[in-house]
Image (cartoon, rainbow, N blue to C red; front, top):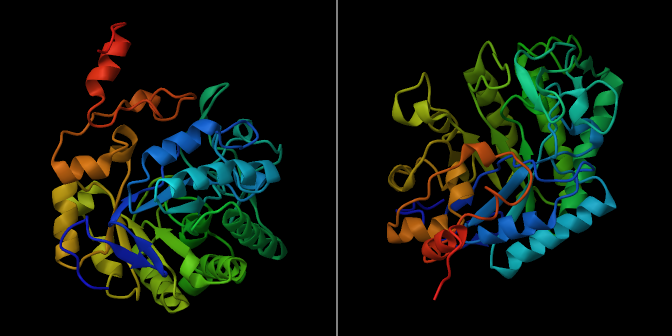
Length: 377
């Protein structure tokens, strides 16, 4: 792609025109119903942020077995599809573009957070270290997963294909496969969580097979690779990921998926990789290998985003928490206006607080007056 000088320049991914290169990155917000149905608040939330060139939704389970956290949305029932349709309509009415991120959590799960009372599935029966939040008991150890049998894996891949079909039926412009942050696809990629001895384990070629076959199934469901994106996080140890050779693993994976013609490769890097000289920069690592648009996410502000675009390091830049607290982030970046500070205590709580109640430019005084019980005249 042609090198951009600022995040405000339009671009194109998979034949889809974007009005700028600012991406709202996927963020878990835990506002869906127990049945995984997005609320009406979600339509307001995403429409408020439709000035982004591209919105990528919160991680959405392709099936009940894909759920690990409380109050996360799904894309496997008619009710869920209809609720998502309200959201995509609201975003499109504001001139926005929106992809659904499909996230199967695999072993990063607890039985209390799920609507099915069977163990979560994973490449191997290895419990993830650490804890996961539950509404009823607070933080709890991750549940012990059950290893998928070889003959079961095609049915899990089929869940992704069906979820892709459902997402497009709900009006999404495309779908992103979440193969980052320690969830099921990354569990297959990583040598510490994948101890299999069949065709899905052992060598890097075998460990990458699940991701490649899942992408192929999603492309089949969409009818075009141009509607499918892929998110990766090489070297990320979140959710107990400790691959013996993350560089080699992701180089191989990227070499294999580049010829597929995906809409984009979304690379998540930690802020240290950008600002403090981490062991390796995953964007620099994969940029020369992937023949297509690159989205870089992780620790960027307006200036660092523009620098990466201007030197050709990426084509689009993702912003996460800044979009929570600044629904009009694009306008604030453009005008140089101050950014609203986050309230981390409300990132994952139910209801509108910390979700749809952040003010846009020009309304801060009104919001403050109403909160104080005053009148606006």
